[in-house]
Length: 277
Ligand code: C2E
Ligand code: MG
Ligand code: MG
Ligand code: MG
Image (cartoon, rainbow, N blue to C red; front, side, top):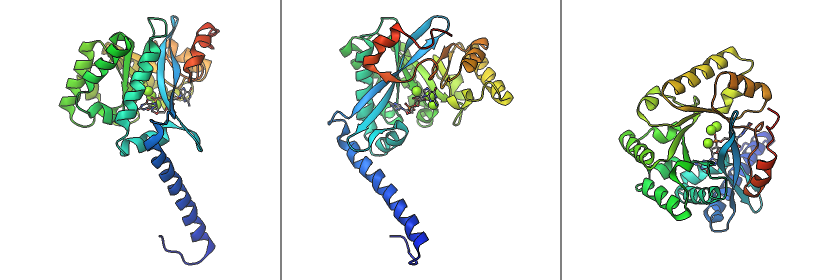
C-alpha cells in the first residue's frame, strides 16, 4: 500500500485511487464470464451516402454489466485485449453482425471493427470466410474496419492478410484516420476501400480553417488513390453540408442516426432522421 502520513489529504487520495482500481479489477474479472452470460450486445449505426441514403450499418459492441450498467467500449475493449479475450469476443461480434445483416435489404453492408488480437491471429481470413459461409452473407457486404494500430507490427503478414481479404471480396476501411501515426506509406501499400476521417476533425470542420485544410487534403488523397471517404461523428446540418460540398462520400454520426438496437432498424428505415437534409 502507498505511504500515508496520517493526514486526511493523502489518505483520501489513496482511497479513491484504490476504489478506482478495485472497480477496474471488478470489471476486468467479470469480463471473463460476460460472453457466456450473454451480456454483450451490438448497436448498429447507419452509414449514409448522399443523395442515395443509407448504404449499411456499423456494428458497435456494448457490454451490459449486471451491476455497472452499460460499460462503454473504450473502457472494456482495452481490458479485454490485455487479457487475451478480444479474439473470442471479436469473433462473436463478427458472426452476430453478419447474421444480422442477412435480414437487411440485400444491398446494405455491415461494417465490423477488428481488434489487433483478432487480426494477428493465424487463420483469420479462413475464419472470416467460414463465418460468411455459415450465415450466408455475400463477401462484398462485409466491411472490416481496422485502425493503424493493427498495422503497426508484422507488416508483411498484415499486407498478405489484407490482400487475401480483398481477393475474397471483403472491403477494408481504415478507421480513425489522422489520429495516430498516419503514415502515408500505409495508403501506398494497403488495399483500403475506405478511409474514415476521425470525428475529432469533423467536430470543428465548419469553423477551423486548419481543420478544413486537413479534411480537404484527406478527401483529395483518398479519391486520388481510388478510395472512398467516410466522415464519422457528423452532428450538425452545417457539417454535413460542408462535407457534401467537398465530395465526402459517406457520412456517419448522430445527425444521420445514433447507434440503435437491431430491433429498431426496421422502423428507422421507414423514418430515417436525415430525411429533411
Ligand atoms: P469507432 O469505430 O471509431 O466508432 C465510432 C464511435 O463514434 C462510436 O463510439 C460511436 O458511437 C461514436 N459516434 C457516432 N456518431 C457520433 C456523433 O455524432 N458524435 C460523437 N461524439 N460520437 C459519435 P463507441 O460506440 O463508443 O465505440 C468506440 C470505439 O470502440 C469504436 O470507435 C471502436 O474503435 C471500438 N469498438 C466498438 N465496437 C467494437 C468491436 O466490436 N470490436 C472492436 N475491436 N472495437 C470496437
Ligand atoms: Mg469503426
Ligand atoms: Mg472510427
Ligand atoms: Mg473514432
